[in-house]
Length: 516
Image 1 (cartoon, rainbow, N blue to C red):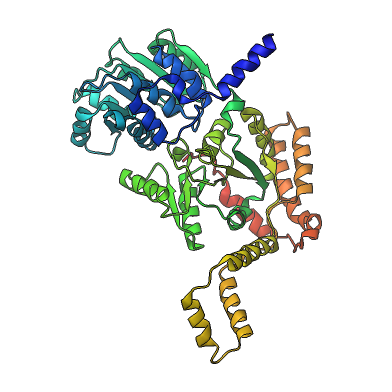
Image 2: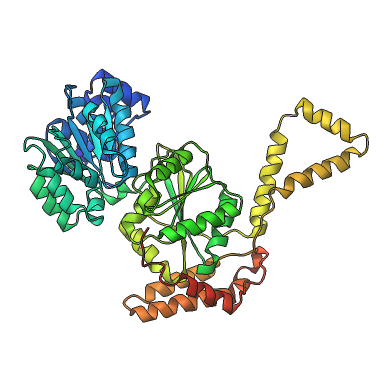
């Protein structure tokens, strides 16, 4: 009976709809306009508790629907009286804009206005918007400045801390504590955090009143709509590997994540020189430039977005087909946030990570932490990509409707050239545009990857010096042995000069020291 009862609960959860929350008609209209059908796990578990007036502490990742999880019930309970009724505090400007846009979308049918508050913009303009708003979405630094200088006073009924662990990592703990000294004691407080370090738990005890806990397990946190793959390459091959994969995957829109600001700038210049429409985002950019960059990517004016992790938590674009990790992220949580930029709104997505041989154990750690399997694949050869492009072109030609102007063009050419020669010439012109560049084989073969994975498993517990020697040895061994391992794929010699390899290693040393 207990098993049957549990099964019934699971079935009820899986078929739950937003209608069961009994939202007002205007809010249901906004939900329908947004295309929401069934609540996500964090929405399913959080909304009823918030509607009951409970403080909550929720552990959930970016991309799981947290904004709707707190935004919908808050808008349901807002009175609509003049003044700010809800305050949402987020770590970054990008996330502030994203959350504000989504809350505006939910609240506009009910007549609610939102204001976004962050640094880098004039105080007076923000204060004017705050005075007209019902909901404020703010970053800690600017909000504290406004409250301490008494430029504004707030008495919100609802206060939300979103991405609390990120605010802790960015050093905003003191600002958060100070902000709460300016807020009324009678309020409903909601905290959302991807992880729950000790300082977050202590903060929760200080600002929450008998909170209820909502925890989305790792299996629920990992989006099953995202296929996760990794490719093993030497450090000097990363650019070539990235170009080859983009050529092969032909993404609709993609994001490339780098660890450092200078890597974003360098890679952006390089990709632009290769003919791609590229936009870059990192912390050193001016606010207007950042907003313009994000807007261009959302509108499809650029096809490739290159960013540091600052964008992982604050970029909301539903049609990103691929995420590329140019380097491994620093931790598993960052990995989850990065890949969460694809596979959104019911779409399928693919996350691709480039790793060096000495990073294979990190892949296994990430798999364990996020509860997902990363598939090992080999980078396609130039011939494989060319064959795929040729097939796509042939299909496009077959499916293309002939236009009158094309007929006229062929008739004109037929005066001097026979029809077969015309066909050959036109095919040559078209094919020149899809020629695949670069060396034939990039990265390690599957057999060699499997050996290195097994070797990494057996090296557990060895010191850092051993790991370092293994990483360099794996790279050199890969250069010497790849030709034999992949000759069946039409391979050419894999050898690169030792000077090039050493030069690239020297050039890349220390790249982990500065985070973007």
